[in-house]
Image (cartoon, rainbow, N blue to C red; front, side, top):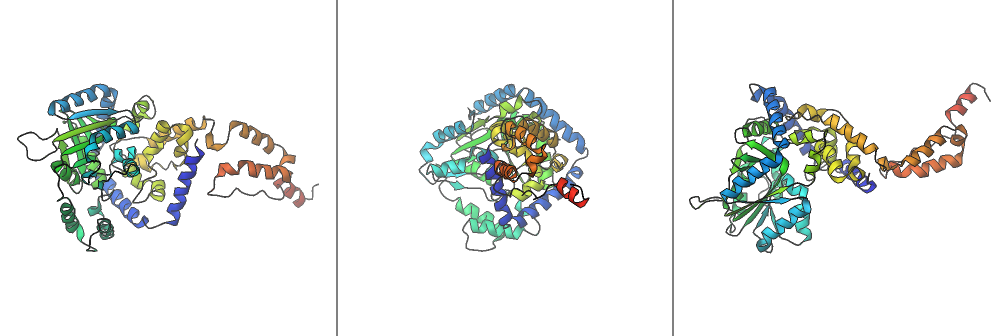
Length: 445
């Protein structure tokens, strides 16, 4: 596996240990999600049945994904929208650049920090290209639901918005956000993600807490939506199972405060909505994962984020500004990036089973991650130690004279220090072996 990727991950972990500024917020978010997961079954008359039906509908749509994608494209095209396909993240970025070219030099480009936007790494690509844009995203979490830390988070958001008032409260922030949006929307371009796609009758679903998606989509001139092909729902009749389970595990309620369904650009009879609607369907390795017998069940995921927030490793590694680790990444990254490059992700998991317990889509993360570990161990770069090195180590460890030799012990330490990485020190060998100490203690020579 990639030693560079492994070292970057370990360095980020070390940075999280030294910087505890985001930990109180993450702990509060974790407590909020813990309560939501505990209360989720009470939101349903038959909770387990709802979960099983979600898994069934997901299996149904992923088994015939090509047909559902064609049905979705047909319905959206008939409504006036344009559906584009991107095989990878770079193709998605190129399509975006072609669509926003007229607005790339203006201030009227708004981008929401959604899952697919992060996957394409849009913020960094725009910054590297010198493209000016406004980030509409304020927080990864439902901040109004946080009990004791909500005021602190609201202060952070107010500071991010450069507000003069230190603690404006939720209402003050909402009003200020709308004040910022008084700029001309006539030529504005809005780039966002989405939660679900509905094949029949053809719709894009966005779930949120503060109405940002609904506000921007209603007044922008051009709306570009990045969405993964795995986020398809068979029809509008089954959508309720998906949205209610996401809401229950994220907010402990059957419905989020804002759900926006977009069926196409605005018509002549409508006053709100984008004049142009573009939907970029991103593959980016998803077709490859669909061919995997063990890992494809990860596409049952409805992206409620409960597994990530409650994972003990993720809580230690992630921050309120950046997510480096999630149980879903442990499954997807080794496949999409290759086991040689990202195989170490499977070994970052503790296999505590917390993610599988809270998952509304009944994904067995432990089984999949164990399978990924097996696949990773079969690569030549496993744990940065080649099979030839392991053979040499085995021969040396089986010979007592080799272990007693100071020269050979020094060779072992130097040869295998790299595998330990820069974050921890290779353990030193004792001056005397256990056998020598035993013989001295019992007077044996």
